Length: 209
Image 1: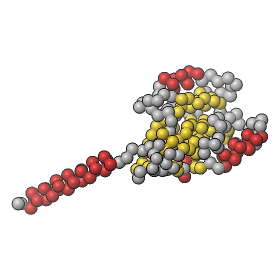
Image 2: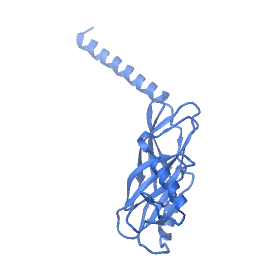
Image 3: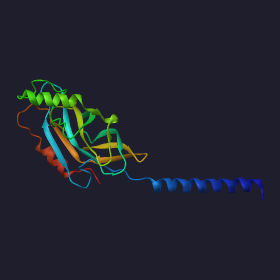
Image 4: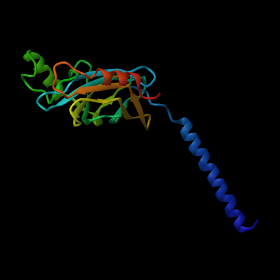
């Protein structure tokens, strides 16, 4: 056989072998088992509330993160807001399900935020024991509560985000899952929110499945 034909045949064999290995790797890759709640196709949940009047950031306790694998833990990598309108994600962390950070709490929490000083003490203690997102590991069949710290940076009014996505590592691969847990933060300073139209729009326009 002519040397050139040999080289061509060898290249074709290498290409076929490489393609088969890629297909085998793709087929053997296990799907991630993180359930963030509010996955596309399961409906929309909207948390609505005012921004702190003193300019602090605001906590949005988004959902419980369930690891539905009974054999493998998972580690969280990153979170991003989806279709944000005037909201900036400045921090993400997790807490145990019995360590509540109220949705809408001013961050960082301070003594005097609530009429009940015991409630303030509890919130501050839970804040101080938070686990940064990238250090959060959810064991098999485990659950952690996700808290997003949001900074309203847009114009005065009803600022929103359609939901969020979580990237995590499990079974040796990175996976990303989306959630329809939407949020609306009213920066108008009014006692009664006028964000009903924005909330209705979010409910009617979920993240595509």
